[in-house]
Length: 147
Figure (cartoon, helix red, strand yellow):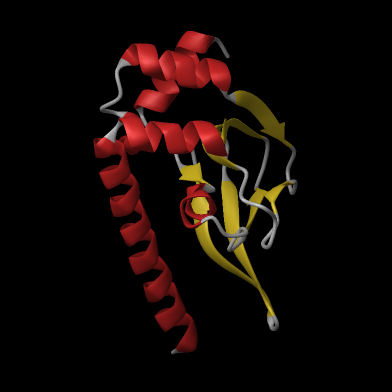
């Protein structure tokens, strides 16, 4: 995948749509492209929140490790972002993320992600909207599972 194709992928992520192409190119350049094998962890619940990931290709599961066992709370796919919650709250990872198949992702360092939020208020609003949607979906799944 080329730098230009990574920039195009980032433009598909709602929170990055308003960021100018030159800044997205810098973001893609300063980020690390990483690959995950099927079943491989992006990170484990409780790990330090040191980066966010944008999925460029493939699918992943978000799983809570509960005393009763693993509980899948979400599925992620191309152009989804994960890992930003822990960065924003400056807390350990609240869930584990596991590759369902082969996954290619862009790893965005915590410092870079926080700088973007400071420079682009519209990105901060987009992050808040995404987190609110996730909370709604998680609440709905928890309500379904307890019925």
